[in-house]
Length: 285
Length: 245
Image (tube, chains in turn purple, brown):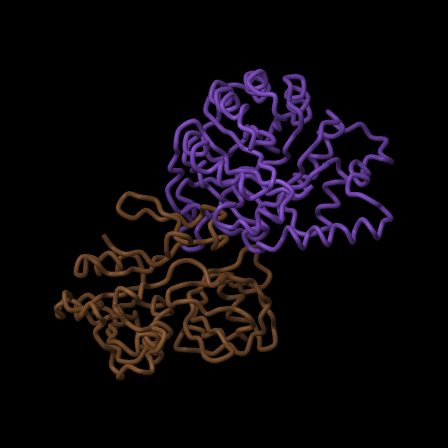
């Protein structure tokens, strides 16, 4: 039910945090190692933060040989986030992960704001990845998509089993004194509480558009936030920026969410999924 | 062992233009000098990394310079306020290479002592980079220090560090450092990047405490990478103290 957002936790550096989750999602892995973007890589903003890490990762070979066996020892279901610069990259990664029993699901990072995107559409990438694996495929989408419900429907038609909503959205912060971009990469991905209404709308719209299972994320920092995402249509929630300031957040949110559900007479978190749509008479596009 | 606790603010005291934030220690381990803690900055999205300045009984204290919204929020905290503190984190100065018996500093004579390796520790700091030195100096039993500041007002922070030679701009710490035979000293430095670079020139095997914006402090965000000799390193887990090449 409670996951981490990809790239927001290193389970090998903080196994106690990972064990407090229901599943651990790896930092996005690409076919080849990537050093990531030049510093400065993060900047706080009034209601969140920007990051421009740039998919720093050791590459799939290192993940498979060194990290995956150690991650499996945590005893937490593993989701592997994969990224690339062409549909064939995603297909290749899904193929090598398919026969790894340690991997529960694969998340396709189709929306990193800090690197050049693959030329193919999200649906074309899902279509390329789908035949390579029997594992559940979750498509992680950007809230900046021109027509997000249409993108969601397209990845569903291409074979996605679920959606991860949302990735960060491009943002900019300027130095107080020089007025130059604070980040070395200039633009970064915006996350934190300021992203929540945008993410909530994305979950709401895509739930209505597809009915697919949704991992909701974007500015969740309390049990009430988590309940909002469930009500909008998520069946799982993921923690991102909150983990940076509060490594105890998984346990705290679990308690707070249980209290929220109990106060509403809901027996299980799944009973809350989609509640926001119950009285809706307006078609959501 | 790192932990995160909500700690009561004891006081915020002015030290020149800096602020010494004192909090109750709770169940937190002060760790080793050069390690840091993530301090919740009231009403800000992210905590702030601060190296431990002093570890008096029952307290932890942090020297900070209120230059942005986070440090201003911390410097404005009032006695009785409570903030989350997480740590100790990262790798501090390696005291073992000095041969110093850090567990029993009281057995040593004042004025510092050469360790088993025969090299006296020498602390070199600039500006707010002196923050970890009071605790470090205590653990090393007051070794000599060279501290540089941009004004006499800033130099008031030198009072926290015993046996310090103080220089004020335009004089830089490298001037008195160059006069010393650095081979006889093991330099432990903390300060702005240009200072660290200049110290390395004079003392190639110095231990340098680096700084970078940091969101988490425990390896989660990959935000604090700094490029040192062409290699990106996550400061919170590889550092913040790194041995120079």
